[in-house]
Length: 70
Image (cartoon, rainbow, N blue to C red; front, side, top):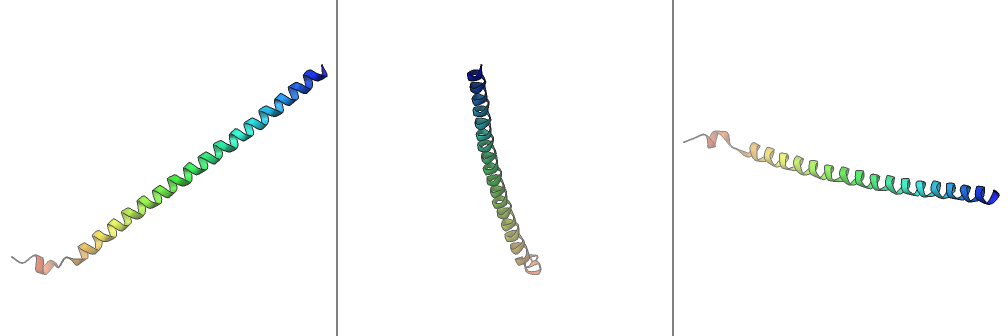
């Protein structure tokens, strides 16, 4: 009976350790994915802002009086 209890306790501990390791790996993976998503979004939005800034500069460079003449 003692051997069976010891075996059950060891198995329970093994399951606990395996579950903790799995949870750690899962959380690390999720953290990496979230960080990558944020990096991608940041780069994307920076590109959009750069593009908008370029359009603004070009729009401001239009010489309305000269361009409107026939």
